[in-house]
Length: 202
Length: 422
Image (cartoon, rainbow over all chains, first blue to last red):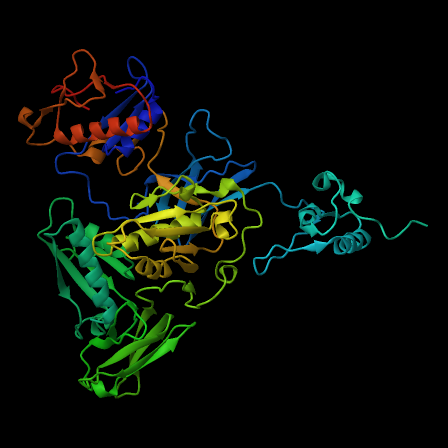
């Protein structure tokens, strides 16, 4: 079979979701790529003893994430087997025009046991080597507040005592500074322009 | 057999009969001091299968036993001693305690050791083990049965009821049962945390708003058992959606299968956790089927960390702690590689006959029906006769394609052909 608006690769996927017993993608079929599919007999499919968290040996399943965060960043997926288990994680055929960030994976179990799949998404906003970031520690839900004097003291302290060659990223605490007239473009100002330097060069 | 073996056997039979109600498991060996050491301790069972339909065999019973977590499973095939499955079990609880899973506070419930039969029930020791704010008391039953007690929850939370029975050699049989003490209803204006603490603040129970919150973290809830008052009432972070799903399931289990309505969820202007998509207001869809005070009690049970009763309208505000930002979901393969073949269960490079079964030995054209479903067109000369299972799969295929908004017919280029070989 074929479909005028669906490629044979995707049509085969639809056939799998629809309960066919056997599906084959035939790219060399007469007249163009086609899908061959067969149904079970009248006695129905074989018993499936597995729950949603289990996968039969040798069986493939596709893994995706929900929601696919519409943010700039990088996505990573890894597999950790435990207690004799083994499985492989490969890349699924991508949907044409789909985001290259969220690559769907195909999991195949090869030895019984438990495996853990870890998916992580990095917003690419972490500190780089030779950097550290100042962020507020939240405890009771209240947003922290800094007076301008406290902010000036803090910035002067890290300016004076940060290790040579190490950059301190303080942009994350700027929005908590309250109780003073903020200059235009406060959030975008270079850090050095946001506080007075107490120490003068000799 | 020991209690753990008995429980494993019950679970196995239950799972097997869910697959095929007619199948019977027969235990051919259990406690037998003339056999090996595990037989002599009642920790080993030999099973055979009878009355099983095609496709259900001892190999499947063994796989089921492994799947439900039995400690050791061996399938001894037919050429060795007639064929049976052997299960063995590590030790565990000795005493089976019968008690409710959930009790309301100040409502006495019976707690009893139901097996094994105790020679001297008066020697039974039952006590309440606390962990957290949950608490309760055990008292003698009015009829004075020494093998049972009345348990009364005195503080919301969870406790473990422990039973011990001394043996003549100085050792003990023991068992344990966890009981949740939860209210039947929550009164108006009640505020409660998941650990049973009352009068707490939302930030104490569910934590502060996410300092790095972004709207992109929100999912769109679409549970069929739940109504949504607006589109924003569907928007929430994943942990909140998971708690809502549990609440909808608990509500649906109430008499009349009542539905619930999310009145509001994500609200960027809210002063509570709704601003971060971690709080929602939910109410019964039909107050004659489910009251708000009962809904509040149900909300206390599943994954919500903070529950606050509201009066106007009668509703429940509930929120959760910060959690996973996304979940991993699995599905059948979406796209199949060129030349790949796959079974319906997902086995790659399966053969057609292994996946779908060989041609029916008793096939006749009388088994065929004419396929008349919409969304399918047949190439010239292709038969429209199919067996009923193929018609069902074809109809499901058309529906799946249409549900994605894809227009066009599935074109069948080859179908029933008595001369076909594969």
